[in-house]
Length: 109
Image (tube, rainbow, N blue to C red; front, top):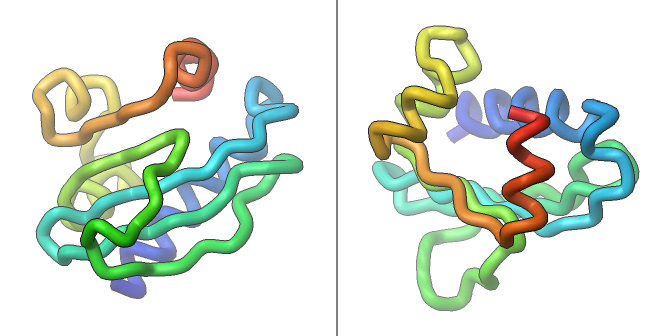
């Protein structure tokens, strides 16, 4: 889980620092399917805040921007061994968000 948190902070940090993310204030979650864990946080002010790991279940609030993937795919994304576009197109990585957020994320990803 430590490797996944480091990888996720790297991805989200790059995302938050992108000028296209300026002004975004959204809740985030990343469900790691093989670990039955959800990492939640908040993207605001050009950074990701309040990152915490929760057990997967009905008590986890639905985030504005939601990622779903295995821990292996998360690590492969950060290592450059897997590209987001093909992983998303084949269903290895799922991204769910509102239409406005999706349009904005398109510029970021």
